[in-house]
Amino acid sequence: MRIALVSEHANPLAALGGVDAGGQNVHVAALAAGLARNGHDVVVHTRRDSPDVPTRVATADGYVVEHVTAGPAVVLPKDELLPHMRELGVRLRDGWRRDPVDLVHSHFWMSGLAALHATRGTRTPVVHTFHALGSVKRRQQGAADTSPPSRVDDERRLCREVDHVIATCTDEVDELRALGLPPGRASVIPCGVDVDVFRPGHEPPARGRHRLLVLGRIVTRKGIGNVIEAAAALPDVEVVVAGGPAGEAFEADPEVRRLRELAARLGVAERVVFLGSIARADVPGLIRSADIVVSVPWYEPFGIVPVEAMACGRPVVGSAVGGLLDTVVPGVTGELVPPREPAALAQTLRRLLDDPDRRRRYGEAGRRRAVEYYDWSAVVAETESVYRSVCAIPDAKEAIR
Image (cartoon, rainbow, N blue to C red):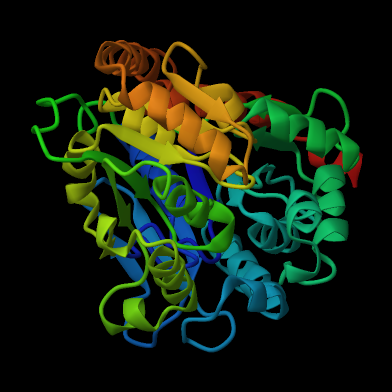
């Protein structure tokens, strides 16, 4: 098949760790690579954010990244991209008229809007993955939500008009139904992990302190502050925080400053280590260096870090939200705690840190679960099955518009 992936802000070539560069970038890159490996012709279309990047980049994994001009060729926060989605859609439409595709798979709500505009009046099916929902973000963040005001209404439109939705967890399907997604138009396919790269290694070296690892974007909703608060009640732990912008931008980042001030105020600054942006190739080794990987977001559409940790044979303590409700099995691969409750987090961590045999069992079970359910080859195969099903009913789009 000729497959177009649209990912307006999450470029698979981008460095990870920035405020808008995280799990979606990894997901799109791995999905594109897996589809290409299975013989499909795959192009990832993303918004040009620099005048210096080439229009098309052929990757070593067999797919092409196309940088599409839509708005100024500068880095913009994703919440400022909506006014440029119509231009993105027009340029995609023009390109696909010259070089037609069999199917479009859009990622994130604004990509979905661009894909609908680009395919209107055609029979090219659109499969959509939200990755995050504005309805959930608004409920969790309230006035702090910086999403465009139309986001939830636009998500309702996507639920009505795309041919099929691939949700990354079961919790998301309930949210989509509340937004008006018709029955039978969603499949749950989780994000995947490369179990050959993320794999167990040696046990963490003996240290004077236990190591807790927090990995990912440094934004308030990820709950990193709650981990630091929990560390105040755990004098024998160090917290390693990996992620965030690179270089000088890291020290200037407002959330990094807030977290440093919190650690100092709680008297744990010397036990909280900020690594900043790290290379993707260094992530498996960093995970293996931890006694426990902690992922306690306030809300989370999926959350790839717990799956990567399980693939590396490390126990996970996560918050009982979103995708973590699917991935982490309490008492088997890790533990789940309520979000925003550092006291409960500290108690759970204490029990697990004091029981090395349980940590080992959780790690072994996590590895088995990651291989069985989250290996990318299985995720790609399930996605291909959805594509084939959608393409088998080419008139579906016209019927729902």
